[in-house]
Image (tube, rainbow, N blue to C red):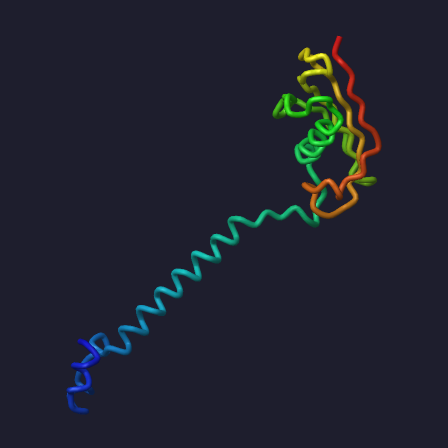
Length: 147
C-alpha cells in the first residue's frame, strides 16, 4: 500500500489493516534490515583486515622476514636478490629479545656475476610492531660468498 492510499483510509480501516501493509513500517523495516546488513559487513571487513603484531614477541619466520630486508640494504644490487622462502636457521633468546638469523642469498655482485652468499644477522627486538625496522636494533650483519 502506498502512503497516498493510506491517507485516504478512515481511522477504523487503518486499525484493521495489518502491520505489513502499513507504509511507515515497511520503510522502517527495509532501512533497518539494510543498516544491519551493512553494519555486519563493515564489522567483518574490519576484523578480517586487522593484523595484530603488537604485544607479543616475533617468531623466527617474522625475524627472518625482517633480516632479509636488512641484508638487502647491504647488497650492491638489492633488486637482484633471491632469498629462500623457508631455509634459514634462527637462534632466538626471548629473555633478552636477541635474534640471530642465518640463511643464504643469490644476487649479482659489483662485477655483474651471480654469486651465492651466506649471511648472518644479529639483532635485538626493541618492542612494538615487529614488521617495522624501528622495532629492531641491528648488532651486526655478515655476508660472505659461499665456497
